[in-house]
Image (cartoon, rainbow, N blue to C red):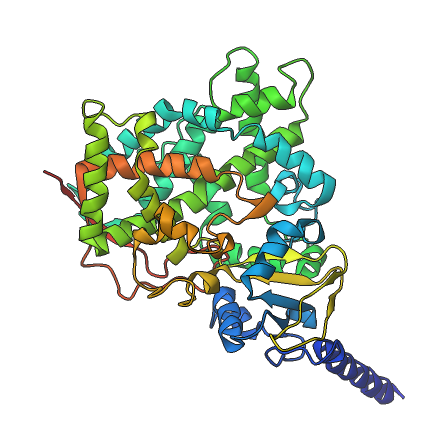
Length: 499
């Protein structure tokens, strides 16, 4: 009898997975890659053979005439990959109310701090928490941080100068992370992160605990993206407990200081907003949670963009010369000094940043969840059949694939900042570039990321010529075990004095 029960159970499981793998067939013979039971179309991601960005790029290229492609997540949950840029616009902007939730799920009881980040929220809670931070990241407040960021940039250049006397080879992601975490610590909390002077600095260790490309951070990201139910069952937090405790203590100390001595930085703007200029007691969870948002918005993605920009400038010296020529021209207008007003005149440098984000986007996809039934356009040009996308279905915008589509960007593997001149931008659909996302969920820290990156890169290039180190392995590859872009074997550079 026991054997019969086992056989029936196995049969039931097999029938369930066979049935679940037929979802898109049952919905009208939707085209898409053939799934495997349990693993759907993502087995190669789980085994580390491919990054999920590469898997979705393969789906994108395999169906060149399709507006969208059906696929299966882990546990055979259905989803679609969006190919057509008009449908990308619908998802991210025009029909945002149908797709207002990111497909990055966390349990608020396990991750209370991350729950305050607008990235993981939807609906009214998303509006409330995004509005709390939007009032902080205004252009006027960002401009006011210029002297603070410039001081960190000067410290950055001095760190390069004294360190190269001992070792001429620098790993770009490492040094750029030191810079951005020092900036965040200064302008968000008014403290020195000591990343240029103390190899064991606590602020640096806590930032790395969240974003460093380790197997633990990879597991946390994969669970949040593709198997949130397992994360909840195993009670795996995205933010480790010791990081949570450290942030709470650090923020409490900062709040105590700000009650008696205000400082013109982004933390003060956030605290004033949440406490209604000190007239009410601000909720500690709100303050600490949004402090983690500062770190996510200003630290990791900015350091990634800066490190890949330095790589491309080192690999393309004629473009580096053009960036420096513009920089020197702008600085000559203010007696050889970099000014806040001068930053806005560095249009070619900004174009090089945009081209870097096209080729090396820190986020490979923009994952959304359909929050209410939505009628999709026909899958193919000659189709008349319509499919209703059911609420709860995953929707993937394949940023990496779109950015390397030769029909949108000819010779997509060539680094060419001229793609982002004003004229060339206008010649492409707006949603062909997704380096900061698009629509209402456009990256909150976009303006600040460009602000701090321009200051840091300008300070380095004014003093040093950047070259590829003999240690650099080519071709440059990215790590397959990371949610965010990270170089597989590092980006190695040398810095020579510029005449």
